[in-house]
Image (cartoon, rainbow, N blue to C red; front, side, top):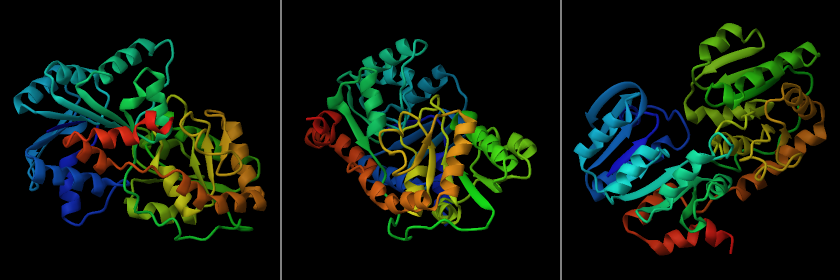
Length: 376
């Protein structure tokens, strides 16, 4: 099997977790272990990462070949894939060059991605081309993270009978915390967790917090994550911004619970599936202020499970935060409803189950969890 990823480093994660180190994001250990299981039961497995920070190749202790590339050309990646001679290809990125290569060789192909596809005049042709490949009989199924992201696949022309909504095995204790009440008199803390990139709305969150402080609401924003904006945020964030950087995933839910509000300000341009940050925030029972990203609006009900604002609108984001932090009734309602929302968002098909069904060509499982089945 060949597993193709856009980013990450399977080898680094495997060695860190094997030596007792922490997860750096949710379900990291789960995904590493599932690949180890496949290597132990089904034969040789290689994980190729196309956009890693460093180039490396290593045969790991679990029998998985880890190979990372620092922005290699498609031709180089495909040459390495040919040398590996896979019979099965698992795409964890919708990379058309690899799809075409695998389909042309009639390999056994599946995708499990976490992307949304919003069609515009600029990307319409590329999305239609991608859909053509995804509808090819060589592709067993196309898994996307969460139901809204699956709907976006259908929107670009992928057949609903081959789309499956998947999720990780959630180990979150959704009953760990009781509903919260709005605290009085303390300086407020907002929390952002995620990649520090502009399209995730991180600068919108920073500007909204500056605006709130200028208008008399004392609030500090903690930023947990990593990304290309981290140095700029440290340099330009100001006294109201605390750039924490990356933290072990085991800390995240407690940090969310300790905060007064969790911000998920993704802009529409960011190809969200359905971010794990939202699951974690709901489990923490801390109210969420989220953008109206297309992947959020069908899952989060405004003023019931979150306060929604127009993505990219800093003043609206600041007003949404102010509303949550100045209205005890609204605050308690969002916190009280969090557990029910968390339960409603659960997806029955898990990532490991998807891979097991694919490797055994279990069409009954695929058809049972397909988007077409859910719409009947």
